[in-house]
Image (tube, rainbow, N blue to C red; front, top):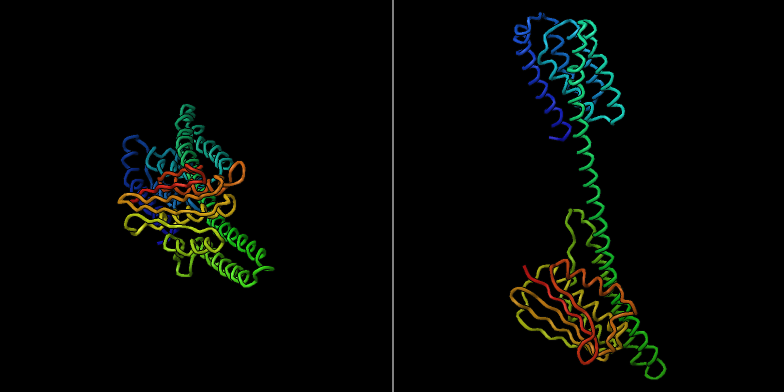
Length: 364
């Protein structure tokens, strides 16, 4: 059942309840107040109650019909009774579903029309309760409307926040993939230029490495961008980057002239996808910084698998600089990745020279 159908059913049930109360309660109210109850009394009760069927779609029309019917009912000196409940629901609906200004004007007109019976009865004291039948449900309706709008704004703000966070996450992934690929290509291109005139056969090997590195970087970039797309079946495409591809990453680094040693302790578990990707990105970004800024001769990657955590350490033998003066986005991105998983991240000069990056991520 769609939302519109559910609303119609709900309004229909409300109308039936008020019809039952109105038809069953009007006669006892007349006896208690010593006021007449005729066939027209019930006709007006039914009209006012039936007007509530359109209270969501045409709230102004509903309030107009309810006001006219209730005012005529009171002018004819029928007993105060259940018809006022239906009228109050109409007043609430106008405030709930109309903008504040037209709803306020309509409520003011309803108060004036409903007060006609006080002129007929010459009972000025009846103005206060007559106004209350409009003002009280109107205030409740305005409060409900403002609460709904505030909730909608909150949902919109959260949606925008999630969208911004997703865009930042994708931008960070693209930064990691493209940054590493371009750094490796740049280093290999410099090697090829240096060897081209002296040893062209080795320059050809460097150019081949450039071709392979660029192709792998483009493939990984396509997979990264596919993370935010949906397949036709509505399933999210999975990422392929992870520690399983660490050997390929190390091989690309070694081709640039910076040997990388990998040390693993513990039995590798089946890591959650987020932890696996974060650990891989830490290694990738750290090695990228080695290429860009450290001037290192070697680098060492240490992975430690413990029952409740996994740690990553990357140490190089460079000059101890992780980036340009003032730092860059790489370290910030790594720190945010690890912090989002509840882990710890440190980066700084290593003992004895070089630079050290360390990340620890708890396992669920």
